[in-house]
Length: 268
Image (cartoon, rainbow, N blue to C red):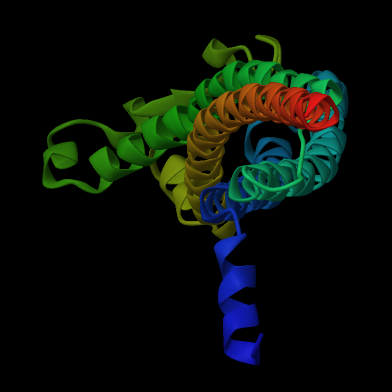
């Protein structure tokens, strides 16, 4: 076999569907974890600078955000390992299907592992749907704040007192009602929207939400691949069982035929 034929054979055993799903999963998780971590840090800076200048008022929120950042580290590490495992499982099942008519045999343990991955990926997909919905909440809050700033800058704002246009983050439950100042109005609000922390955090939350959506799509893709691979392994197992039975019957038939010939020769 030449080098070209060897390369073609190797490329034929690559699980391209699993490879695409793995790349999409890694990209989505990286966007969600990286952008989400930086956006949370920027959110704390905005709250401490403009909405809650007393440390005790936002101490619990700061602890929760730090905990979420540690959770992000764990999510990134887990999905890096899980994606590699699913890609390896894709290589395994592709080899099983490609060598269906050879001496390769699937085991019960291999089929059980594939079924376990189907169940686990289904659970993770449901969990990431919740993460995707949760990641849309800060996008909604920042969008409301950005649209309020756009209202202040619009010509219609000259008809009213811009100091009466405010954003009160206390109504969202982010900080307690006794936090000071708790809200920003008029030109102060406009200055906040022009800061780098707000601009960067807002767009990073959008990218993080998109990354969570990409991860959901990747997990759905993985779920379809794993379900198909499990079915292929089951069919391969049944085919090998049929071939074993067929080979045994052919051997028995050959033995009976040979014994019959021997008996006939001895008689004659």
